[in-house]
Image (tube, rainbow, N blue to C red):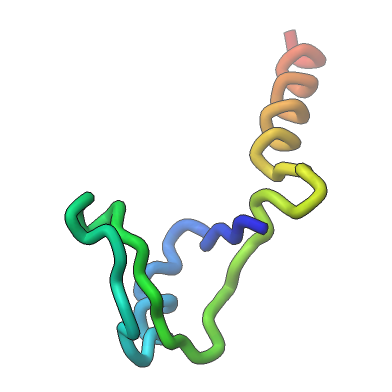
Length: 72
């Protein structure tokens, strides 16, 4: 399962981090490293991709194409 934070929620999510417990692959750089965080009431989050392969991104793209075809 891949969870996605809605745009604009970085400050809210950052306030929920209580502790950095570990970091792996820091040699890849801070954004690409794997961070193990202790959080409390972390959210809001949206399921981007689930364990059955469904993807909100694919659904949005497909629905968007259908709407464009109807408009033109």
